[in-house]
Length: 145
Image 1 (cartoon, rainbow, N blue to C red):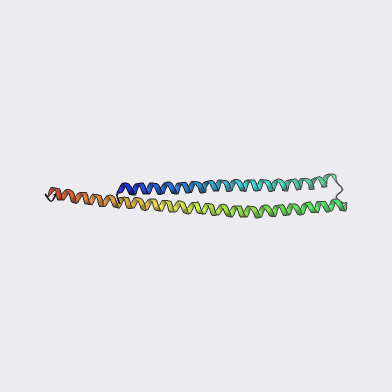
Image 2 (cartoon, rainbow, N blue to C red; image 1 turned 45 degrees about the vertical axis):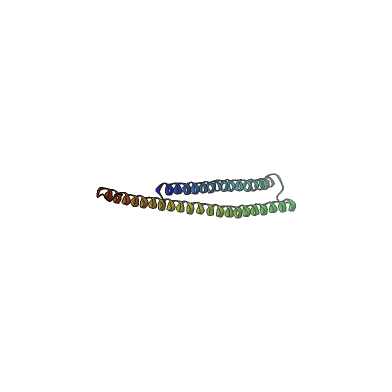
C-alpha cells in the first residue's frame, strides 16, 4: 500500500467518524431540548394546580367538606405530576447519558484510529526512505541496471 492511499484512507475514515460524531451531537442537543420541554410542561401543570389550591385557600370556604375534598384531590394531582416529572426526567437523563458515553467512545476510537494511521504512514515513509537509500547506494556503486 502506498503512502497516498493510506493518507486518503485515513482521511476518509476520519470524515466518517466526524459525520457520526456530529449526528450524535445533534441527538444530544435534541435530547437536551426534549428534557427542557418536558420539564416546562410538567412545571406548568404543577403551577396551575398550585394556583387552583391557592385560589381555594383564599376565596373559598376550606372548611366545607366539598371544597376540602377538592383541595385534597388537587394536592394528590400535584404529587402525581411531580412523580411523573421525576420519572420522565430520569429516563431522559439516562438516555442523554448514554448518548454522551457513545459520543466519548466514538471520539476515543476515532483518535486511536487516526494515530494508528499516522503511525502506519510513518512506517511506510521509513520503508520508502530505506528503499530509496538502498537504491541510491546501488546506483553509486554501479549496481544499477
